[in-house]
Image (cartoon, rainbow, N blue to C red; front, side, top):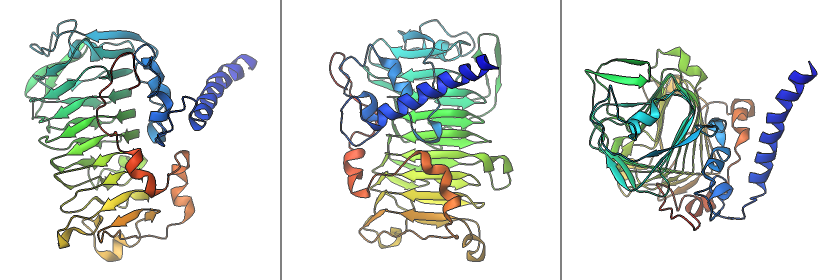
Length: 381
């Protein structure tokens, strides 16, 4: 019994120490962005890559990715055979059974032939190289756990499918037509998508459906896209009631139209993001999601019809007026306004207590480096 107690105490203690260090800004970056303050000012970041796994916050904070595995260096940008991928390719790396921290030998553009179907406990770390995943199907995180996607340019993603694709060293199977998302999370958990630049995909930039949960989407720069982010499969899919997603420190930029995000059923903490463009709406939902918007900056476009941040979809006011949608400390610019609803009882929002919002006046500084970073070996990132 004592051994069991000790074994559970050690990881909890280590986690508490890590949290304390982040709160103290132990690397003294002083950017105001708690994720970046955890690792970015280390000039030896390239030798300490796995430190990143201890820097997540929000609902995806326990996503360790490939922290406990070997380093895998992608040397080959090709994707000729989705069933029998060559060693050294990104596809060969992500399907392995063991934990892996995946990096890139040089700048490269990867045009995938079919969806990149990931196995559990993987980190794709683009730091130190300019890595573009573009021109074909993109990343699929399906029924797996502990994934970190960091530092990639993901754009112009297409539909794939009606083909055989390998998802592990022992298994491949038939894939029907994919949606064409940049990052598709399907029944996944403990997922962290951080510091990526995403644009112009066939369907969503980042979608999470079918009971996915424990997700943080942070520090990304999103541009030139219609339906940006869908969180929840359908109004009738009740397993999404357990979905918990943190959306923090992102820049929703030029050429965006709607769904930043569009939510169903679950609990969504939208905190310290910079919304500089939307044509229809920024945050919307149906099926009674709880949305906690804190410390964001919403700058309405000059189009008089696009001032409202929110859209209560697929329900009459008599129904949506009971959905718990809160705006606290948000900065509304150029006539932007957020339509609140529900009782807003504090207990409804208690789940977000793991991530405290900074004042909205700090959003420009917090999000100034959103997107894929230009990290150089031997200097601060």
